[in-house]
Image (cartoon, rainbow over all chains, first blue to last red; front, side):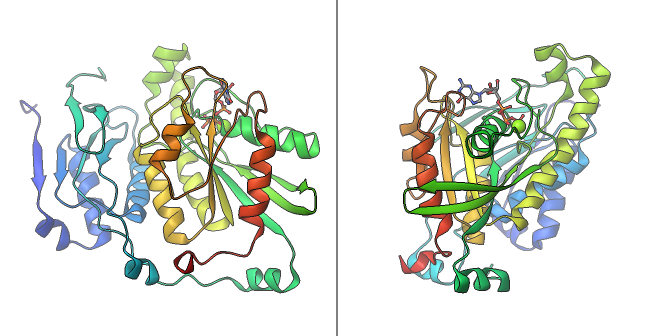
Length: 122
Length: 218
Ligand SMILES: Nc1nc2c(ncn2[C@@H]2O[C@H](COP(=O)(O)OP(=O)(O)OP(=O)(O)O)[C@@H](O)[C@H]2O)c(=O)[nH]1
Ligand SMILES: [Mg+2]
């Protein structure tokens, strides 16, 4: 058992060099290890849906009960972006295992989360 | 995603003006999706869709009710509704044990089925023509689940109506939902009492009945 909880600040560069699928796998793998990730650039909504799907597949009800994810909404799409059906840029996001990370409060400027070890005595 | 082309079936529908749409009822667990599905099916066909419960993840398989006709004076729309399992980012069987007194074995089974239900709900997104996104208006609407579902519907160019549910409760604030998602139509309702359902039906005819709108032209 390691002591303390690891929080990784993951740069946009690191995320950009991964394919969409690799990005999702990377996140799930790290979070399942009990890590909390702060992503400089978040996921698109279609990536988030895939992340939820994969999370559901990997929940084992004992060591992994799912994820907590918080972030700011995608930037408003410009007219040009909408014409080409492009999605807005995802913004800073925090993701962690649901048994550790809990959102306390959020507004459009600050997201307050708390890390509670042993929240779930499994 | 690039441009979104209509399917052949949809083009045929457009040409012959057949107004039939499959509407998915989506949202987080416990917001009142099944209560709303039952309300709609009861109003339009005198039938029930599924069981309602204050325990989250009550609906764990999607259920369809077909050929429900909404009429509103001169216009009408025939819909199939799909009541989907609540979408969540986590499922903890301990919550069922601690908060609802469900025994451990049953709670584990429920949790397992709930995770499968979430996956099924997401899969159904490929097979609906429009979505009623239900939110509990006594709660903060700005959740990852809501934002993610809406983002996906936008990317797919699927029409959505937000049903701001539970307005019979004193602490409800449908205005908060309206200001959180100003780009989408929001209809405050109580699925439980049936309050304002007529407004929802009118909005459904208007929003789901017309040919798929190309948002960027608006
Ligand atoms: N006060 C009030 N309670 C409601 C309303 N709609 C639903 N409820 C209650 O909310 C709880 C959940 O309702 P369901 O219809 O089972 O919710 P659901 O969204 O289908 O939940 P899952 O199937 O678990 O995802 C039940 O206790 C309902 O009685 C409403 O308009 N007002
Ligand atoms: Mg239900």
